[in-house]
Length: 75
Image (cartoon, rainbow, N blue to C red; front, side, top):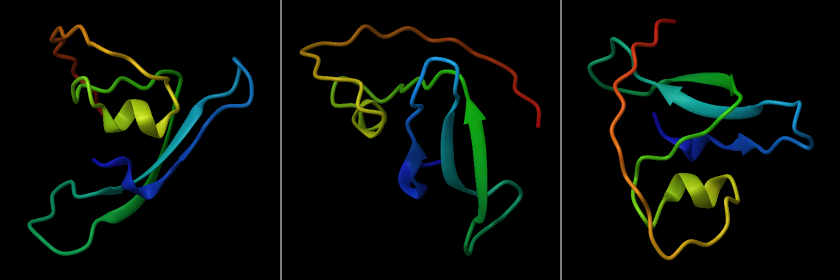
């Protein structure tokens, strides 16, 4: 999944983030299916120069702290 499809930053604390992305689930090539996902939290696991953090206007940081969490998500 990539945030290349765009995002909607919530206007208040009660509204979700809305992410637009191309889903490639079960595909072996070609163009992904356009999808939308509403979430309460966006977590970027892409390091100190995070594209995810930049995409959601998270601010500027000089360092990052990394930890790993494995979560099972079913759609």
